[in-house]
Length: 107
Length: 114
Image (cartoon, rainbow over all chains, first blue to last red; front, side, top):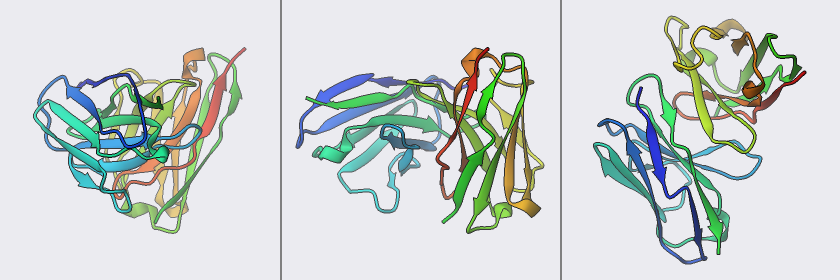
């Protein structure tokens, strides 16, 4: 089964900062890599699918990239509502899996 | 877009069984593959299982294979998750989600405790 790791596990940043979250797969995967945002007590929200395609309604400050085993989510200018936990998920083959998450906190 | 509502959560004793349901509305269930995902308190997301649109194909997380069964009833627009031999570490919020487009329910809490 494909394992995903994320770094960092937590991150402190300020409004307006640019932040990057990394997701690494244990083996090369196709472009089927999704990014979710989860706020406390809420279900996850899909932000990006197929590595770099923005889900409808998601602000353009969220950018996904990567290939092979290494993928990134970049938030170009943090807004107050962006402080949340972010998960990557692969859909390359079953079983699917999620990364352990990156908690983005306000500095 | 699809609306999903999970039910069937609650408190169950270790070793017990539980069947969760996920009612889907606003769309026809037969148009969607479906997943179950769970999240233990304060922990990350764990993908559990998938079932194809017609129910002919199922996939499970290796760690849960043999203890859970995913099924669906398209005539009732409902997804199910049967869980057996429950353990304390199965305590979690259980979410159902459509495959594509992606929609998630709000989750149902299962607490395994004596």
